[in-house]
Length: 322
Ligand SMILES: [Zn+2]
Image (cartoon, rainbow, N blue to C red; front, side, top):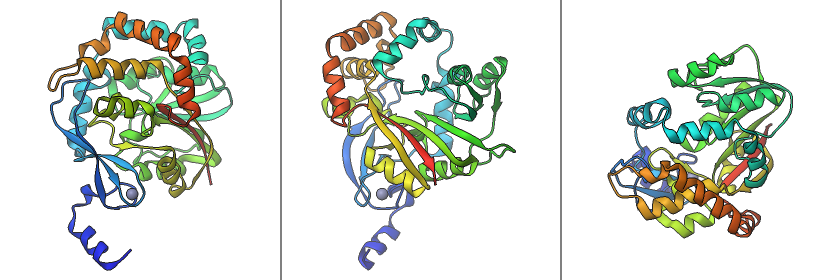
């Protein structure tokens, strides 16, 4: 790195540099707004000139994020609606297991094994149910006290601390980050803390949106997985691999899936999302179900080809601690 470049970097606020390598950012996608909740703040997606990692810009502060999560996520945003009740009924049914085999398993709900497992951001314990019934001794980490209480009522140990301050006597064989890492303001630090919590040869299971998805190209700023400002980092296979290596993990397996639900959500957002207004259609059970069946039934070759060409919508990764 030359001197001029170094001094230029030092003049720029740290928030305007890459979260992984501190490199300079350039514009990638302009004028991206929330397409779900009606948060009317424009953001931009910026790309690091050094490592190609993309991130939401400007970065929201931690206090702002805490407030947004409280208002819109988990029990703060949606509780006991018809949509959530139908979703819970579906996930608890045998049909869901068949669906995972057809549509892809982005939450590791089909993996069987043994050992201690920690699900980071376990919410009300939906994943913990699957991990326990598939042989793991499963625990959760969840900051939302109401969601954590629901998981505890099912008999799970759920820790209420942040990952950074979390310590425990036992070491884990598996740590799960199911659609979590992209929410982090410091993904390298998050992975380093997971490294600390794992046994020798322990694994981290990660799923997150793929910034090289063909749906990103098709829907541009309406791609549902920009999900600003909640999604901070937007990983490609290469940038995720680099961040894992920097945190002393090696990728054992990386595959791609394209859940029909995510395609349906991108279609709905591109048609109905309006700045400053919640997109109610995303929670219309008949509309979402009809689109999912249509997409999975008619366009399955397209989804399959996208995954095969490494342009699927979701990265599904198993990485080992080194
Ligand atoms: Zn970078």
